[in-house]
Image (cartoon, rainbow, N blue to C red):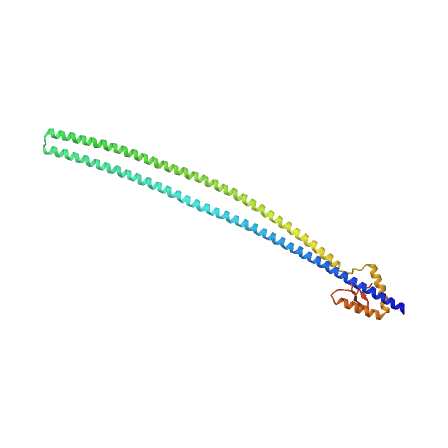
Length: 313
């Protein structure tokens, strides 16, 4: 009887020690799983930060591309508008030059007609005066002097008229030549502007082609960066999933084979001592109230280690 009591006491102590050890193992397991979960959350948070940064970088890149396209569009529109204004100004200048030439030619023609008309009127008056003197029978000497005076006046008037006409002709030629030179200069300026415009268009075409090439290269590099980023995220996610699977796989019975054999022997003895069995069951129930998964009672009143419910040992 004493030996049976000591054996029961030894079994009780062993079971209590194993219960304490199971609690310690469970606590360590919870701590380990908590650290794993915290690390997983940190890594997922870092991945989310990286993803957002990449999205923000891509958004800024696309925004910069859109801004550059809009700037180029505005430049093209502005250049076209400036060219329309310059073309309209050139047409106005050409029309104004033609109008001035026409007005100047009409003015010179009118001046010629007015001078000829005035000269003819003076000649007619001198003839009228001469005929009047002759018809009145004035003295020959006086008439001769008057005729000489008239001829001198007519000669001076003719010389002055000729000089005026020559001067006006020269001025007309000078003005016409100056106007022609101005037109030629304007034509040269227009030709030069057209050449500059063609050069600007060619430069704009080269720049647009270069911009398209740069944009395409930037887009290719962006797609490659996105592909590498997604591949990196996939690798990290696979690594995390493998770690999670490993943690879950370790949520099993932590007892080794020797402990299992010892449990089997102790269980065999406890099955023959119902009083000790009830006390152990009470101790196990008390230990599980704090959320620690100690040994639990399985089918047929057998004690089953943590993580191996309803298994046969």
